[in-house]
Amino acid sequence: MNIYLTFDYELYFGERTGTAKHCILNPTQLLKEVADKHNIKLVQFVDVGYIIKLEEYKSKYPELEEDYKLITNQVKQLYIEGHDIQLHIHPHWEDSFYRDGKWHIIAKRYKLSDFGDENIERIVATYKQKLESLTAPDSIFAFRAGGWCIQPFEKFKSAFLKNNITVDSSVFRNGKYSSEQYSYDFTNAPDLSSWNFDNDPCKSEEGPFKEIPISSIKNSPLFYWKLFLLGRINPYEHKPLGDGVPIAAPGMRKKLLTQYTQNTVSVDGYNAALLSKALRQYKDKNELVIIGHPKSLTRFGLKALDRFISENKNKHQFTTFQKERNK
Image (cartoon, rainbow, N blue to C red; front, side, top):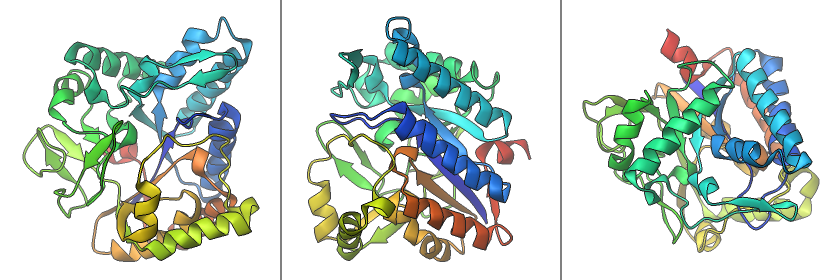
């Protein structure tokens, strides 16, 4: 089985975004140390809008100039060392700004589909170009939508084709959520390791694109009660390393605590305790795609990931999208 360890390289987007140091730089370094220990490579979906905003403001704010230097240097170094760098777009950076020592996140246009066709094409083209200035020409071909908001895909199709974005990894089977700011519905996604598609990433058909979905797992309310309890009993092990807060997701906590839900297979926090269970559930599949966020990494999760890799690196292939493309 191919196992992909994928991470969304980004800040928080709530009232407190957190710092580059604690949300991105330090936890990514810890992840890299685990990967280096086992001689495997990670996939980093880099939130390029943040880097572009840092570049815009760095001449005015010395602290942002330092963040820009550290972030871009880390992305460059990850790429040089063979880690896979791919495109992650949170387009609300188009409207957000920095003032009085903090980022002000304007999330009215949180989804790429909230923008007009010309803006979508501009965003995809300029964000990809910026990321490839840190990696190499034609190295960016895979995409993960911010907030998993890959629908309606028809709005992105032209921009993706023009920019040679041919792989998506935003869908997770049976995932569904809707709020004022963002939404996704993957309840019709096929039960496959990957598939080709044309206009709908949840429909397997002949087309120029390939969906490599994030693996999903069904969790009981008891799991989340335990998660919240552990966070209070042992915050040192279970508190996220990031120093921000998430964007509001109205109704999500109540849903998690009161009913069974379909969620991503993740290394974030206590979710990492389910990695082996997920691997068993996917034993008949060709691929297991695990998601994580450096900002949401915990000491518990880091140790669980280390054990998971150690137990499985000789049984399965830890790989990246770039490695599979080059075969």
